[in-house]
Image 1 (cartoon, rainbow, N blue to C red):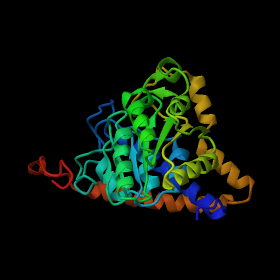
Image 2: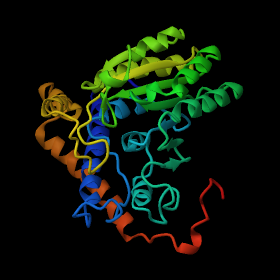
Image 3: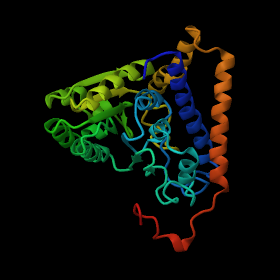
Image 4: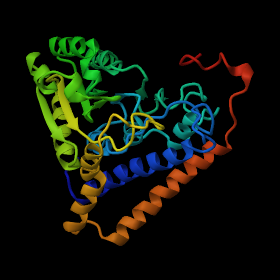
Length: 329
């Protein structure tokens, strides 16, 4: 079903390009009406964390998932939301704080929730790990084969929830994949200043298989994810995947990144997974420049429609402030 043929490679590319272009457009819109920088102004008020450079982790894993599988993301989760198939119009409206959004404009970009495809994310660092256990327990009790993906960053791997969740997932052999997007930064603190040892070694201490993958290469992510997902579906328990990715933008939009050297940023740009994959597809005659342009135009059209939908939607009225705050409420 998921043989890595040319059709699947092109599908991977389209997902990655959609994520990259979406983040670039949202990043441009974010700065509208914000000069001089005022975080409260513009069509997207508040903080915004974009996932440029982290496309391969989402595309390479989510392409294997079924609708019933759950993905619990982080505060930087647009990549996984898009790869999991969240409605782009309603997601964009949510980011804009509009009433047509996924949560009627009450959640914002850090709290996207789409039960139709089992996707959610949270602004609480490390929250995804125990939430994924709940899905894993439900799957086991119901004797089903759906699984859960808990996404976290390398900074989140230092939270107690990570260790506690690894323990229970191993003890109860839960169908959970812990996916650590290691971009080398916990907000403004470099990984070598905050994290002891190797994240994969922590998993092995609990008897959980773990693999460290270079996110430059989406094909490697695809293959390792498939192995982990197949293992979880067959009832053999959790896996930890640490994917080394590059953060091409600040921790949040408006972040001056004074803590980061130009050399570090240049290295990140040299590992751009989208450009690397484009080179691979061209070199192996899987796509030519004309075909890539057609895909780019298709993706642009989808994004433009989503943004237009969000711009034209209404804000929630003040008398709805306490409505739709809880699911079903």
